[in-house]
Image (cartoon, rainbow, N blue to C red; front, side):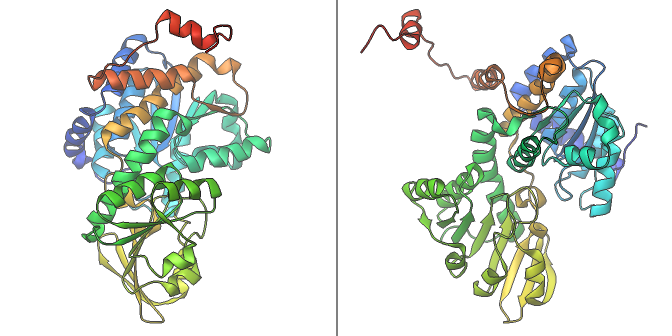
Amino acid sequence: MIKHDIKDINLAKKGKLRTEWAAQEMPVLKSIAKRFSKEKPLKGLRISACLHVTTETANLAETLKAGGAEVFLCASNPLSTQDDVTASLVRFSSISVFAIKGEDNRTYYRHINDALSLKPHITMDDGADLVSTIHKERKVLIKNLLGGTEETTTGVIRLRAMAEKGVLKYPIIAVNDAYTKYLFDNRYGTGQSTIDGIMRATNRLIAGSVVVVSGYGWCGKGIAMRAKGMGARVIITEIDPLRALEATMDGFELMPIKEASKMGDIFVTATGDIDVISKECFTLMKDGAILCNSGHFNVEIALDALKNVSRSRRIIRDFVEEYTLKNNKRLYLLGEGRLVNLAAAEGHPSAVMDMSFANQALCAEHIAKNYKKLENKVYGVPEEIDKGIARLKLHAMGIKIDTLTEEQRKYLKSWEMGT
């Protein structure tokens, strides 16, 4: 048996079936896997991936292996792992996996180091934990590294900060910044799966509720859109004047978080920053308010402050922790303040992850072919990859679009023709 640390290998059959179900909605990745199996563009390369271990990720891992890579996989969030999927990857795909749903912090970081024991040529991150660990604790691995990819907004922010300070030691492609990633994954994927996580955890009615969304980036836009579509009254809190203006013109109410704290029934954070919902907010909230997070790390809700203002707490439902405050109000925290769409549900739908993970696979191929030209900085996804994925997705959906005539191309490139 290959190296692994998972919950139960006997869950493999269930995981295999669920992975096949997801694959039905991932035609772009399937077409890449078919080409990879013939061309082997990743032959001889070792890839360490720190991603949410879901059925969709399983299809990515299998695509990378089809391309000739050896893959070690660990979880990018302790609550996002699907244990049947880990078992399926180990038993049926012979891919090393180090992930257990609900693992503690010590195990989580041990698993990151287990994934890095492969001595990778390429890293794949969702939150930059592999990159951070390499730069802080495993610098000896840098000499082998050709490049890496980053899946999420928060990770890209961290990596750009490293690049600006001159401490990033190998090139990274910001997969999150591809149009075929953030316009769809962040907006439609996060929007739907966040509402799904809230509903599965609470079984509360969205219609008629006041939903407060903190952050109006692409994830926040998706969450607000879906909540509004289900009949909620949506309030946005923002710090960026441009996004606040956009949210206003999209028809949402805007107000400071402390003001919104008095009104919300359900609070969702999606900012990537710390203490978005702070101690002062908790004491202002209604009895029975629900708190959850859709940002990458569990820092957006001030959890220590919540504990400090509470006199007791208990698990009242799966993924629902009741905090009784010293003023006797009850607040309900979902999924330990971690990503609610993965902690309490199954993450993004496969059709959306098809494009995100197509970007991951093709960017790994790009690194393999072009690493000698890359500098130690954060790159965007090459336009030909981004548009190529969009074309493949449209083709898979049976949608045809127009193309420019030669005269139209000439007009767009010239200035002589005038108006």
